[in-house]
Length: 302
Image (tube, rainbow, N blue to C red; front, side, top):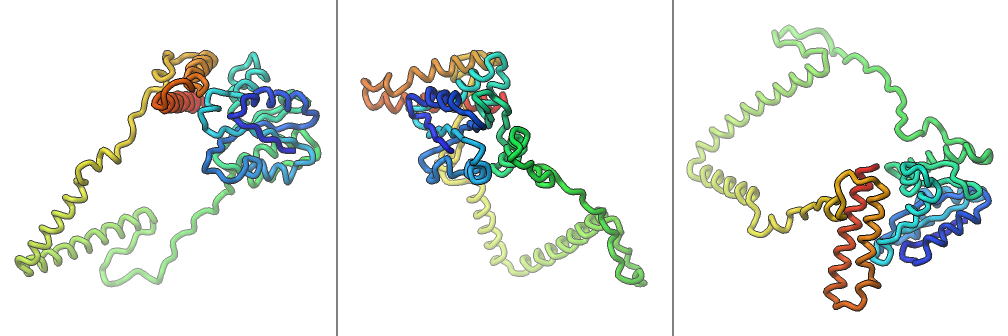
């Protein structure tokens, strides 16, 4: 069974709690981003699709999708669930809100943090599930993310016959010294080639000087872009997230979350519905700034 809830739903928190309370067996709860450009539904993305195919007979899933709209930006159903599951442990509550929560009978059994890719998440989720259910096998330890097999010792470089009698120095056996010798030889060859080209250019007279002038002009054009292009390419100024949220640096996580929710609720669409259209755009921009600031703090805390 797979159920998908959305941040834009005003009852998303109550529905999430209802699923958790009604679950009898193993239940997975996790959040995902689901913007307008994402065509596949959340339940068809990984690792959720693979979990359903492999262990759907013993594992139910509730996926909470954040569409990134203004209607859902001020809601935090996963954070509320984390606080409910771990009321006395803020670190575990935060881990539950940002990772994968495995519950059984409505009680938390394990929390798996999110990794760099869905494939890595699937391996660690299967490992945690194998401890909770005998019908789920443990994953292959050889495929554990980050596991590397020992590499064979490097072989000695081959020798191609006896040393030369021409008096030229033998190429060193050490690969690092050999690479350095090749680089030095290449540098000498490049210097000789550059000198030859310089003599050819000097012999060409005014044609060579005109070519050099054109080359310098082209390099100057490349180094100095047209007027106005710097302003377009410049990155937007990054605002201090603590200042955006109106709190002091180092404020505890629970107090920062309360300040975030209070501040972002002021710009909810229902609060500005009676204002002019330009205020709607201002409220949406301000909401995005607050959300970006909160995400920055969450990244730093993680």
